[in-house]
Length: 266
Image (cartoon, rainbow, N blue to C red; front, side, top):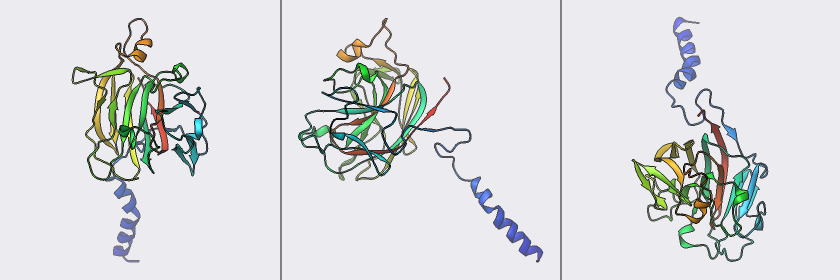
């Protein structure tokens, strides 16, 4: 074997290690990160359902189900939707964490679904305990990371903010409007999109779509002017330092997979 041949073989053997030095560290791949899967891909173990007009843990019409390793939301048993909004909650609350999920919209909206709910779903953060939600309450008091799918024509951002029973602060200003758009791209069709949020109790929240920061704000808090939010205020404390995490059913079929959380130190 010549010296030149030995050098070529050594370079070939080292090439994979050399290339790794130039690869970016992606979310979840950083050294020492211990992401925890919240969804086993087989059933809804660890999750609780609350659907409007129905009791806690009544999964009316098999709205939330698991098929082919994916958590699916469907409305075949509904007839007309009649604002029967639903949510599926993970079993325990969190305060400081990164949460991510892949989602996609499929098929056609349920008959009677409101126009604004077409290709609409989301993550609800800092949710009130689902056992305290009233039977006819449409949404939990929470901070919503809103998912919107494109219609194939117009721009429509996703990873937006909506605030049922809550408010937030952006650039030192209290934001009381219900929804605020992010800076994300539009995602048309049935493509999978990765949404991630970074939550630091009552201090700050950041939204990421496919790894890009698209929205950030701070001081999530109860809205003392909202009927549901007002009921949760205790001793005048408005700030929300934690709560349950839920995923929505808002009349358009949607699928979720790779539902994970990374607990953070305070």
